[in-house]
Length: 190
Image (cartoon, rainbow, N blue to C red):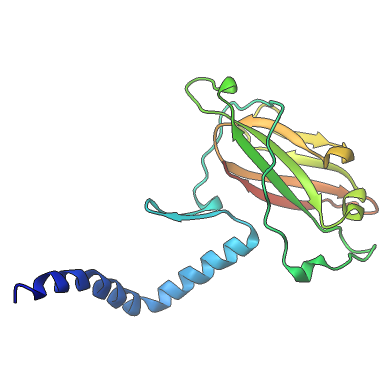
């Protein structure tokens, strides 16, 4: 019997996990479906030893952040192939927000670790961005001047700033020939 005890001890956790997964399979299926839909929507997702983290579900709020120049580029996940078709001229342009962040201890204040942020607009093709006239970025309300207007097409309507906490950013994209802006949202994580 002594030889069987280590073997049984090794099997106990997989059996417990499989039993719980089977018992709560409906809820587990809904959880997986919810995670999948949020990731497809563009929310960040992390899974590791410390648990599972989904973007906007637990943002940290920045306080007293001020604009700072500079940032490093970040790779973005390409859109699905079905979205890569040519945009009709009367349809809304296919644009999305991108961002990058890098740690910069030179802008640390009051015990907070600050990051330099670069936020910009990207289109599926150049004609999409050519139709944009301006972007109004709505930062977290704790920022000085949280509503920032950018009209420079050559930079991709880029906004640079610094922050110490993650938050949801919204942007109103104004397009030629339309009176109502397109509202975009992105969770700024770093």
